[in-house]
Image 1 (cartoon, helix red, strand yellow):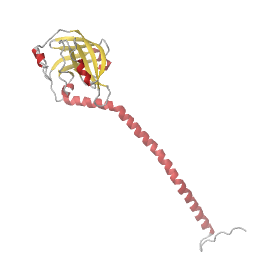
Image 2 (cartoon, rainbow, N blue to C red; image 1 turned 60 degrees about the vertical axis):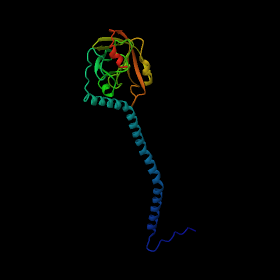
Image 3 (tube, one colour; image 1 turned 90 degrees about the vertical axis):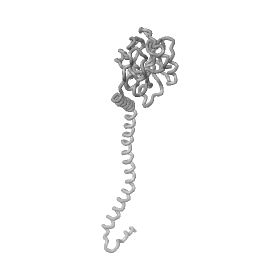
Length: 239
């Protein structure tokens, strides 16, 4: 026998019962499928966010060396505007903080004043002479230092045979590049007291290191020509 349909409540027609049943079925299907759709949509939105974060991170790492260079240049500008360097007195041993020479390296278009001492304020002005080393003409080790991001930014391009000229009030000295060395700060003392006149150009290394670089880049040069010179008791007094 055919199954009897449930009788609708009083006042409700068969069509209304069927429509209500259809609405309940559609509601159930929507309830079951909505979370899946929402989950898939969420995953698709996260992918571009992660991609954007990764891109920003890569750009930040790539730009940090240039930011470091810009900060160093800005420090130089600040010091330049507030520090005046007096010239050294001719014929006397250069006093600490005075300008006593000019260094020129044609192969890398470098020409800067040389100051006695290597404080941060002096390093912002040009090339500095390490106060514990000798001076041109004294037949031993001469140490010149400068920042890798400013005055000595090009010494990594020097090649053997390149000319370096140091002009002082007591004479002009010509040097030729021998080699470049990578050292640690503790090794610098070993460059002093050479048995013959040797000029070292020293800066921090690696050149593109972010922050305080752990090593030193030193270019060794031998004397080609220049007059011997001694400051006598004045030179001895600095020891």
